Image (cartoon, rainbow, N blue to C red):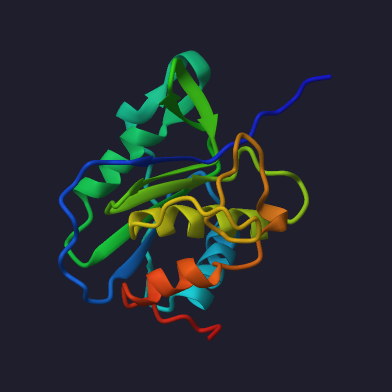
Length: 196
């Protein structure tokens, strides 16, 4: 029996604090490998939490992010690529169905579901490691988790919060919303929750 190891991988990236507290626009950057239906459903989920969203035209994954030895794409290279295209006042999330990875501790090529730096201008989410049930909901939760990191949120100890640490698994079916503490943090960043 083959076991599948699932994980979010999130990281603090030392950057100067963001001083501009104006509402941002979330840019959804689909890569050409992901279906437009998946992009639409994920975008609808994000809009329910943060209504200021714009979907961009699908583009190719950056060639320099490809890791041939494992047929994967390096998430940190994807984020660097997206960050270079993201202007002030915007945050970009890349959506892909391809396998993505990052270096984690002594593991050079650790497969992940998403990556976002805290704080940051870009993040990435992948469908590749999702369970077969509720894939649309899982993918939205991975995307919103990584977007939370770009805003400065840490992992949350609340087991039902979108910001919980995956701890090497896929706990998305247990997550229901941002907890009150994380939601308050985002409201202070000018997030306008439709659900409030």
